[in-house]
Amino acid sequence: MLGRLIKYDLKYGAKLFIILHALLLLASILGRFFFLEKLDFSAEPNVLITSLGLFISIFLLLFTAVSFGVMLMLGIRFYKNLFTDEGYLTWTLPATPAQQLWAKIISGTIWYVIDILLYSLSLYILVSGKNVTTAYAEIASEVTESLGMPLGRYSLYMLLFILASSIGSVIMIYSCVAIGQLFPGHRVLCSVVAYIIISTIIQIFTFIILTALGIFPNGSNYPPGAGNVGHYLFELFRLSGILIFVTTVLEYAATHYIMNKKVNLI
Image (cartoon, rainbow, N blue to C red; front, side, top):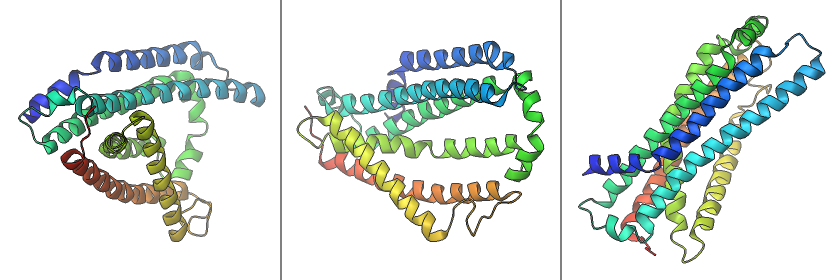
């Protein structure tokens, strides 16, 4: 039954997912060949910074919009399938609440992983042109010295970390939706507020831990120097991984409890 639930969940929103990422890839191709490949990296600094700043801002907005679209797709699917009138049919299926939850987690994580890989492909398309690689070659040694490793290897480590934490991102979305449905009205708004509150609490707690451990760039533990940027970031990844694991377990437990004891269909 779990496999059938996953298959059914993956069908939901597939067209929207494909359209969003097709537009993202198309924009990356156009951005590379019609802007970055024609950009003069030897131009006056003010002109170069302005042009690159505008280009980066546009793509940050585009990436954010696609990411928001994926989050919205997962959240709406979870809410409509389990906590609206559609839930009356869903909960009659021969599947336990845990199976229903894991079907959503697995399908959501699959979408999230594909989403991240397509983001990475889009970035690669943008920066792999001859014009950009030639310009980067002039500062590659400084970047490698600062990171303590080549940029490509560091980017790979970062990608692996983001992929590993994708399940935590999915469970956080579901936990906020589950909390939002506890309220009799304005459930979507309550879910958004729950997401903001939980995110803020996690950020504050992370800041407190970083302060207590002295894990800050250019601080006493990480003075400026060769390789210290990479060392600092890996320490940050390690701490973030622990915090993500703990918060994911708590969010999963809360969501599982709500789905077992506090489902409020409308």
